[in-house]
Image (cartoon, rainbow, N blue to C red; front, top):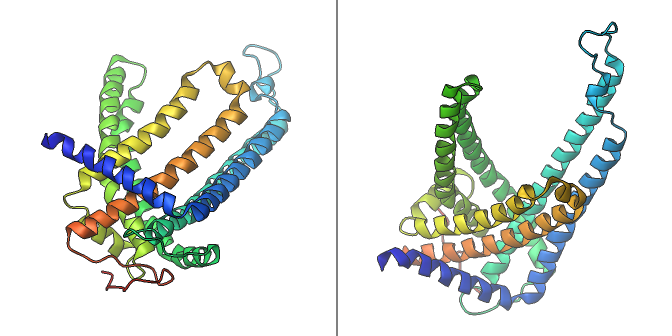
Length: 316
């Protein structure tokens, strides 16, 4: 029965997360609605920008010479124009990613603060103005902590690419196929390891919002200490949330190609909205996990200065 204890603990986290959301229904609805609207708007701008630019694009192959023909001249000027259109699409996508990242950061901060305001069996009156003020105040701490998380993520990506590089060199032969099979197993294991390691990283993000004097590398160190004994619970949370999103995205990708093309706008909006809902509940659950980690270590909860009614303790 010890095997089931982490799963039971995760169910308790889900139950307490729902209770926290119910205590500040108005602000929760406003925060979630703003996040969804801004994310959907950025996706719509990306979609229509790409659609408008792609209408004016002629496939590059149209300008490529036919082998053996007398005219081997390539219209380089036209190809440069086409590449310029591709470049604009790439820039539009990067702007979307940047906008979505900024929206996600502010949304996660507001979500954590809402969860904190409803903690300990009582609801603290938190106005939208005060919530916005606290969110802006916490943004720099969150940026510094996210920088540390990004460096770790980039390091993991480089490791995966280093492992996968041999199969790229020997692609097209039996050795390459064997290496691809081995890499597929290795990359799957790396993804599982990443979800395990990222438990402390996400907890560090929560700490940087709640504890005003603890952010960046210090938040990462503190998260690594606090998560001891409850890392499996965070790992299960990561698996459930990430695989839920992966399953929804995979459903659309694995369907008929024509269906995906015809319903790209609707499916894209659905993914954006679903990811916003998932991310919102994800940070509520991790805030509850933070409370439990502090309690298991016998530490008092520190509350941001704008959330009155509680005394502070030293952060790190």
